[in-house]
Length: 87
Image (cartoon, rainbow, N blue to C red; front, side):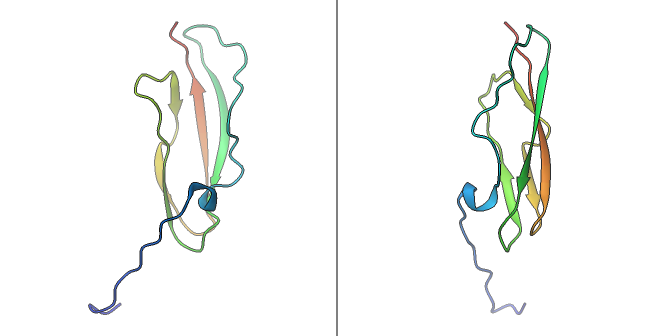
């Protein structure tokens, strides 16, 4: 790319990048200070490299294996979410 060329930036909605992620998870019964986990997959279905960030509340009882990352074209990332209730 020459110095005069510019890279184009595209803003994509999450639904353009992420496929088959449930809108909610049912962790069932989980005793206090124990953990229950679920796994889901983030898929980049765009023709470009995609960054992702999963936000959670500050004092959330959830732990994520990957809170952010970069996905190549057609790449997938498995994410594990753990629920660890404190009270």
